[in-house]
Image (tube, rainbow, N blue to C red; front, side, top):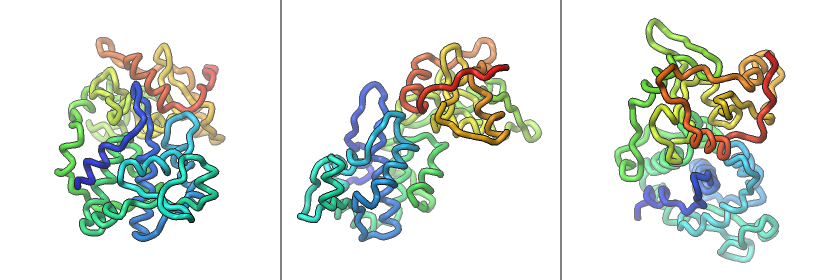
Length: 297
């Protein structure tokens, strides 16, 4: 039984690149709890708030509930649910899950495999992260679910992972003349750029291509905020800032809020700007809420 393949093929609602990270987030959370207590169960009423926070922070912009993955992950034969009345999930209704004492945990065969092979937990975790989230969020997601990873054996993952184009970073940074497209930052140590990254607009995990039309050169701060849905790119290639972002310090106002409505810095003449289809995907699947009005110059 190949647990990596099973993890890669989780049944998810997919349509036109829609993000549905509900099951991956629950599975990451369960792996973190397994690492802490291999025999412990996750009683829905006790973990509901934790799971809701994960969905709010790392899920799609639309409102959603952890009851859905808690029930439906059973169909992937990687998770089991019992109630106070015996085995089996009571359904995806929040009230039923709470009132029946629904408790989930990794399936017995999966738990046994994790005990036999200490590498498997790291491999499954890294696979979930690669398939469903951008690299800028991997470390903080592990911290959020309480996972501590050992260096992973990665060669076994090649069958289920797309290969990235290693040239993308250089192509994107060159197109934007080694400047952050949001703030213009262009720091270097000698001749080597520092703190500049190539960001995918449509995430690589969701079919985003490794090309300049799907890339932005961003500083480390704005890359993280872009992937968290605080920042986006709107019509006319202007910066969007989410109204949900709150920051009272001068730094927050200067480095985030003041960006609202500014035109992007770059790309240079002859380079392709971000394609509308990729901008639209990010606006629907990542950007949170409505954009702030443009800041007065």
